[in-house]
Amino acid sequence: MNETWKLLQLPAQADSLQRLRALVREQALALGFAAGCADDLALAVNEACMNVIQHGYRGAEGMIELSVGAIDGGMEIRVRDKATPVSMDDWRPRALDELRPGGLGVHFIREIMDEVAYLPLPEQSGNLLSMKKYLNNQGVGK
Amino acid sequence: MSADVRMQAEYAIFSLAGEIDLHSSPEARKLILTCLQDNRPTLVDLGDVAYIDSSGVASLVEGFQLARQRQLDFGLVRVSAAVLNVLKLARLDKVFPLYPSVEERIKNAG
Image (cartoon, rainbow over all chains, first blue to last red):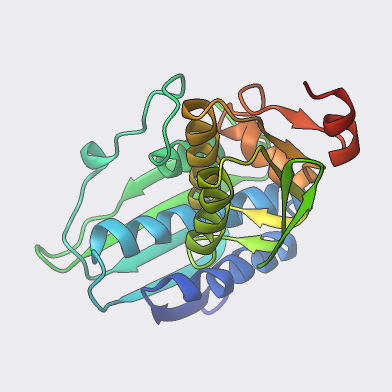
């Protein structure tokens, strides 16, 4: 990461989400993404942070650190938390033909983002989720 | 988010405005379910909603399910482009009844 990355650290609580979304949207527009795609990226990050609040910290106090920056041909967004470590195997999107509330967030992230991965961290020190989106693929779905 | 409920014919018209996210969706959910628990057919006006996330969509799904259980009419009216985009992403745009206006639905109901 270099100085062009924008960082925002906020308490892991629901009223932080609006500011986290605003940073993503603003940076996506600044990096040349269309308004519709910037909205989608803000939604994906909202869902990732919501997962940290609801399933990571499970209501306990904690912090979320969002960092947003340019990569070759697009944008990377990283979400850092110090909650219980999770892996991509824990991401279970629900079947969409099953009409029930909940479970949509993971589906949204996968549809919107081009690459999603947890980056390695020392054991038991939380999670670092990396999500990438490229300017030449601003639609949703794969 | 702001929320407002009014009556029109036998319908409860529930209007939401602003951003519906994890911070505001519990209130929206409670109000929608209260309308349905009073056995009122309910229309949710989303024309002034600028943003909705999965927790807001989940509140609408819960309302839809409760209405179905109680055999009450339930639909979404004036769905904004921002909300429609998210409903499409969730593949729910063909599940919820969507109407262009409250009047349109009430005129053709029953």
